[in-house]
Length: 454
Image (cartoon, rainbow, N blue to C red; front, top):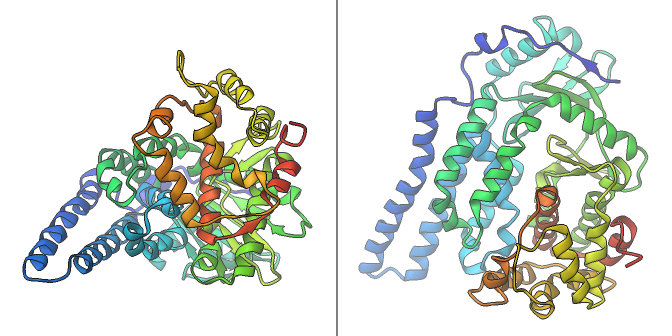
């Protein structure tokens, strides 16, 4: 059982020098600078084209500068802006190469980094969460964070019993900033459509808003992480740090010695590393509901650490889908029917589960043309994911045809499948970024209820 520190009732009143500005006006102004900056660079680019600079070079420069500004603004704001950027970054594999190329490095940065809190603020937060004598519990504490993310950052320290630990601290003002950011981002959905054309931003923001309360309470995260740590203790491929102590805004866990994450493998890993860690990644996502009754619902690569012994370390359990019965049996059966080419059963199952809107005129043949290519990884013994394959599927379903948008507009996503869908699509996006070859069918047979028996 982990230690629970009681929250100081005067904490919020005493916070000063917040690294996250909670002023709606100030934060909105920063977010508003994004479209203004993009418009200015586009005008500058037009001027350069008039005087003879090649159009493709101008576009490349505009995109790179826009990407740099987006990373800078989202990173400085942290909160919901940073979290949205990280969520969006896993979809880059689906975008056309000629468009996403200049953005890729910036989006990958969003998966694994953010500007840190200054030491003075860190010390104030530690005193507020663990009391004025907090150093008695932490004989050593590194002021420089080992990692920074959307609503918190991690420091290396020593627990009073000698164990090396990671101390995850929530940024002061994160709650108010998170809510403010997501509201503003929803209003600026058209701008982010410039980065991710075809991606409907508003549902993504709505989903993030729905998860805010859980992700801000580190007590809930400690509980979920503890269950995962117990269930994966001694696993041959996965390691989960054990929670040691927590408050609502701080979480102490056993330290994972890791210098890089899946984001590094995406940018510079060997093919063997891409295949090995890609398989471990997808096996963990599917095994969680079966073994722990929960689905890790934040699949971006920065949460998956490369360990010295070759294992994959998993962190950040703030977003989980609680599935005490495991993944839905109906999900496995529907996928198996599709693999077997029985689209009459697929059509009936989609209606029963609420995936088809009422009175829709979709037939089995249209469903087969729409879903069929997505099922390809489950049809073969080993499948190689790639950006090209992901991009092809995205372009296909977003095309203004009966089998593209005509079908997509008639498909509904039931609320109980929202997080499952997010993880499924996000996981495929990461596998496509990795270019990993994985035994996807065997993993489904092992961990997706209903798939093996059909």
